[in-house]
Amino acid sequence: MATTASALAKKALHAHFDVTSSNAGTPSPPNNNVHILLAATGSVATVKLPLITQSLLGYQNVEVQVVATKHAKRFFDADKLLRQGVKVWVDDDEWKNWVDVKDHILHIELRRWAHLLLIAPMSANTLAKMANGICDNLLVCTSIIRAWNTHNPILIAPAMNTYMYSHPITAKHLAYVKENMPWVQIIQPIEKVLACGDIGMGGMCEWGEIVGKVSRQFQLVQRRRSSFTNAGDEYTEVRMGNNAQDEEDVRMEEERNAKDSL
Ligand SMILES: Cc1cc2nc3c(=O)[nH]c(=O)nc-3n(C[C@H](O)[C@H](O)[C@H](O)COP(=O)(O)O)c2cc1C
Image (cartoon, rainbow, N blue to C red; front, side, top):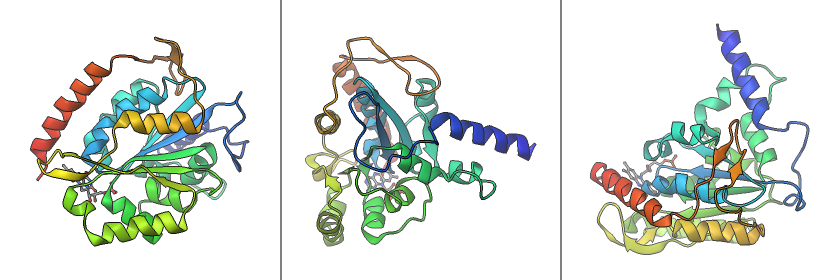
């Protein structure tokens, strides 16, 4: 039974990576797909993860895989993304996929696969871990961040309560990242009414702007309306041009989450 589970896990790992290629340098040449590793943390702004994912998949030659922290999983429906053909990796996958020394190590394979790590949103906790070199959650942000090929960019979009954002330790962590990790670009948070009801700085930059930054950086070209992607095992129609409905969905989800928050 255990052997079967392990064999299945290995098969899943192989299915998601071209393990023969090493992404050791700059983004792929134009005829190759751009691989975006989208990471989400335990911030309420993770409700926007599905929108960011679908929007990125609205560009030609883009593949997206998602990694989510334990707390991030509370804010979106991972099964739904999976059904749309997007692989979602979580901490448990790291050890489930590793049985003996010949096996691939998931956080290393993800780093090899990715041309860009986009952490949107980045919680105060994960920012603190990043600034301090902590890699205790194996897969999700911190092991990948620590094992990152620094020739490739990391984009981070901090999102937190105003008081967390204005705390001096946050400024210290952000300053450390800015000064010492030139491959990391910080997408500044914005001032807004936060899900908890506080008003002020710390909200995640608008998701459309985050996607725009990625598209400009990799010179992505938009797919035609209603095109198809094969980012995962199944082909999925990419929903495009319905931002008003998307925003409404997010607003309702945020309202639900805000009720759960302190
Ligand atoms: C409903 C809810 C919303 C939260 N939103 C945020 C947030 O926006 N930003 C943040 O830094 N932490 C937020 N937190 C706290 C984080 O989830 C917590 O610090 C967690 O340890 C982060 O872990 P991670 O960085 O591994 O995802 C929130 C917690 C709850 C319960």
